Length: 495
Image 1 (tube, rainbow, N blue to C red):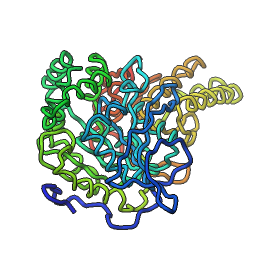
Image 2: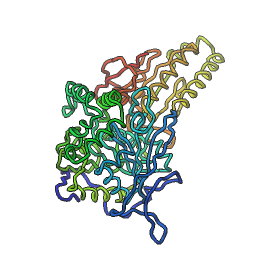
Image 3: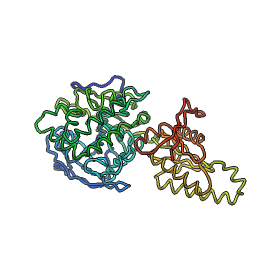
Image 4: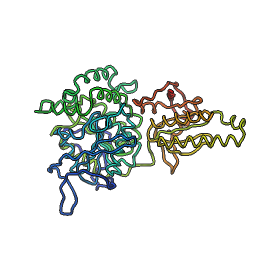
């Protein structure tokens, strides 16, 4: 239950607190860097009064070769992955008294895994701003490196959308979610009035670039209550300079301002806790309330203050609530419903080609087509669900990969002298053995029927989730999809 000044929004269900911890934190053997004490039984633990020292920074190599800096602190049966905000630094975090205090508090009952997203902090710099999908893969990379099978995700600020996308895509690997000072979409849109207007976002980018590295951004916008404490502005300045350069910071901000994961909020099937400061200057409190209202069964705690995170000693009891939420042994999530990007392809004019070519030559061409499609699916980590005569039904755990795979398939088909059409949609799917079902599958199939020869056509949901990826689209208008309620806006991938 909330204590002190904490406020739980009415009508939002709480977690299954109070039960014995489950094996949700089971993990494989993996490299650890833990400073803790041991009792007579030999079991490691850290009590709230113990001094948890900054751990060693290590590196995990992602599938694309990018090195991700991470740390592991604390001990316990529960793994908590801290998904950071737009700029972070795993080592300088320990110089921030309030942040170090939070890590120590969490480390008293959990193994805490912190990391710097690619392009920031101690992780590899990248030529371009990483997409939300690529950043989500960083979570999986550090989980593999630390042997964490199933974790609680703690998404801070921009880390919230990453955590949400991971939880929807991999519910079987997500025990629970804590979203702190976070949002689903920060920009104002016609159907999202709580967002910030474009002119305000542009003004923020222009105002922050010349003062970045002085500590003024963190002091004035993120942690104003700590700004006048001795030595804090100097610490903020070091954090800013080492977290990202001014240009990189602005590029990341622009990418964050294009994030829109509202469409996946109803698909979240794991227990979720949303925490927000009432006067948050960086992410207005309306965004926290929106998350709690649209994530099924989410619990919401609102605390007073103007800081981005809860850094006051008055909020100490808040972490008792969070510990109770995280260790309350929530039920196993329903893993028969997962977020997937669904792809349908088919060969244009296949019947006419089969008649003109004859059975033998047509089947040889089909075999070559199938080999080409399966090669591209393997390259882009797609999963073949089934063939549909002259086409494929496949799914992906990321929309950008799905788009690039569809484009590669179209190009390979063209070299074979045939044209394919492709349709993509991202949504919640029902898993039935090796098959997928549900409305999302029907939408993708209907979108595919609207595509022209050689065209990759996407639903609006797909384009929203790949914002910042560099993939360009052409508006193909609004359509009624047979058997699907409402009207659906479609976009063709620009070649």
